[in-house]
Image (cartoon, rainbow, N blue to C red):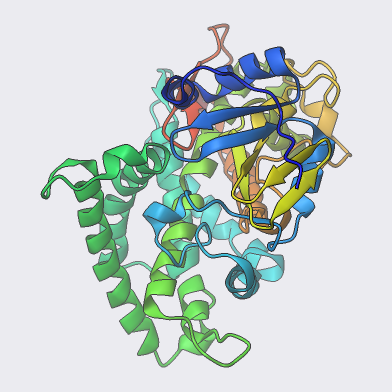
Amino acid sequence: MTVHLPDGPTSPRVVQALGFALSRRRTMERMRDRYGSAFTMQSLNLGRMVMLADPGEVREMFQASPEEADTPDANLGSVLGPGSFFAIKGEVHRRQRKLLTPPFHGRRLRAYEQLIERETRRETATWPQGTPFPVMPSTMRITLNVILGAVFGAEGAELDELRALLPPMVKLGSILAVLPVVRRDLRGYGPGARYARYRAQYDAIVHRLIDRAQADPALEEREDVLAMLVQSRYDDGSPMSRSEMADQLLTLLAAGHETTATTLAWAVERLRRHPAALDKMDDDAFREATVIEVQRVRPVVEITSRQVRSDELTLGRWTLPRGTVVTACIALLHEDPKLFENPDVFDPTRFVGTRADTAAWIPFGGGIRRCIGAAFATLEMNVVLRTILNDFALSPTTEPAERPHSRGIAVAPAKGGLAVVHRR
């Protein structure tokens, strides 16, 4: 085997890792400017990483089989549970993905529109008019209520408990996934111990909901995700275990909540600074293109990774040994002038009537690990924006752009997407 890795910095591992943790995008841009579209560097949670910003090499990474490259050992699964999509691999991942795909596609997907509109109008009913306020707390509540409705299908005391529990739990888990060193349980104190208490509360609530679903005589008539999981069977006829269900439900709740809400906050932030685009948002095709362009210029997740499982893996110019973590630099691809003309310009028209290249525009990742809820999130962002802009006039602004702020995994507008609205 001949190992061939890209060049990279030679500074101490801790220096590289801290710089990357504190400012992922700026560090990637600096490395790209020095080493080109591929470089090798160190991170806190993933160790040595080969970073790729060439669309051809990224496409090869996404096309690798699970036997060649799959999810890294260190990922969100460490906080979401061993049964989470982020943790399971190979055949187990394939089977569970097959089970969980139907609720987020086709007829069931469109059935969520009324739920999304209802939750948006319920949240925006108390919005202040004529005074600046951050929309991100509202988009967080909207997306949380929507995913709770889609996953559990009904209201109740348990859902109220989850509304209070999930925001701090997801926020802390996101930080622990990036900074595993602070996860240690210091005799019942510290972030790790606090997250363990959150998880115990979550498990107790979800187990009560599973009990209720299993005892529901109308279970077969329900279309929520929990009902589907309780009834689902693998190819050999075996059901999902309770721990598997709890981990996957937490994954759907976490992944279907924060990233979508953050993108919606960025959409408001971008539209207020581009009134020409704001004026066209009543056009369905333009609004859909705007959602795509927001995800290009302000990707909430800036990287996506695989870990080499075969003895070696060749991707373009590079030959990587077993265990190497290889990472697609989402943020770098999205700002590459060879892929997007005038990439620094916010221009939704670039996506009107055309599809984005699946190796250049990758906010949902790609390949076998592409986000299972991508279609659901896209529908939700479109319907939320449509509903808000039907009910409110969003005031433009000449204020400077809000700077990106890291929330662990996700990157959010620092001021929460400040808005000024007037009811129509």
